[in-house]
Each structure stands twice: as structure tokens, then as C-alpha cells.
Image (cartoon, rainbow, N blue to C red; front, side, top):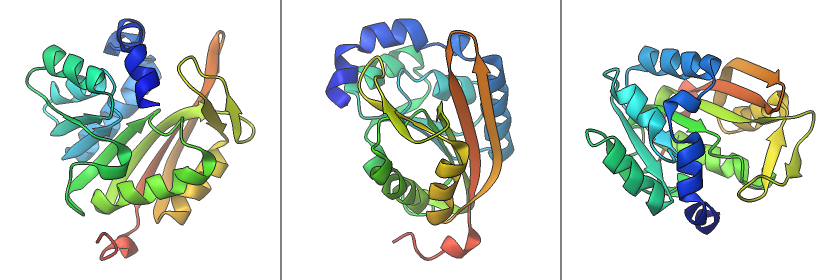
Length: 202
């Protein structure tokens, strides 16, 4: 996956690497969520860095992480006041219980279904109890693989992904879906790490 995105990084940056390319409803949701938490936040799978730059410009303590060095290099140039690290969801650069929130906007779409819960559990380790995760994903009536423009991806019903979150010690607090002409159906979930997760981060 990393190599596939690296090959198409310039095209991806040109088409999607700007907050101007974001749907207004998504912009409102992510901005409101981040402002409520205040930080520290991780933009996990930050791509070209536009979400990190947008939130940092609003005074939010946020850093971007992506496994594609080409994206991180672009982000560091485009948003010089922000912190960006090369890294994957498997090893986010944070200590256990360090962060208040993780934005994973279309960051799990290429994970095989069996790999989603372990990824959620790894993200839970760096969240403080009561911290929140905001997921953006392709929505569909069933979990199914499809041919994404870069590499194979998966659609998820909201309830199926919500169950994965519950099994990873999250409470689902908000869900959203959206459809529109010429666009794949979109879903978003806000989930809060259960207080009972305290002590499991090691």
C-alpha cells in the first residue's frame, strides 16, 4: 500500500491534498470534534497534511503521521509550522495514554477486515481514557472489497464498524452517512475510549 501511494503521490496531492477539496459537512464535523477535544491530537494517515494544517491554524495541538514519505515531505513544506512524522498506524509516535484524540480519516480503508480491530486496539493504547477516535470510511450495505483508484479498499456498514470499535473498548457516540451523485457513500463514526480501558495501554 505504501508503495502504491508513493507512486501516485503527486496526483493524490493535486486532486485531494487541500482543505478546499473537503466536503463542507466533513469540514464542520472534524473541526467541531477537534475543537471540543483541544488536543493533543494525532492525524493518523494524514496524507498531504491538509487536515493537520487546517486544525493547527485554529490553535489545536495536532501532529500528522503518515507511512508515505512523499506525503510527509510535502506536508512539511506546505505547513511548516506543523509537526509531521513518518510512521504507520501500527506504531504511532506517542506514549500510552498520551493523546486526547485520533483522526483516522480514511486511514483504515485498505485494512483487511480481520486487521481492523487490531489496528483500533493499537490506536486505543495511545489514547487517554475518555479520549476519542474519529473515523472516516467508505460506507456500504456489507463489508466488501472493491477496486480503489490506488489499491484495494473496503466498504463497511456503520454497525459492523461500530461493533469492531466496541470490541476494541470504544463507546460509539456519533455516526454519520452521506450519499451524493458521482460520489461513493461516505460514513463517519466518533467513538470514545471506555474508562475501563485504563491500565491496558502497556
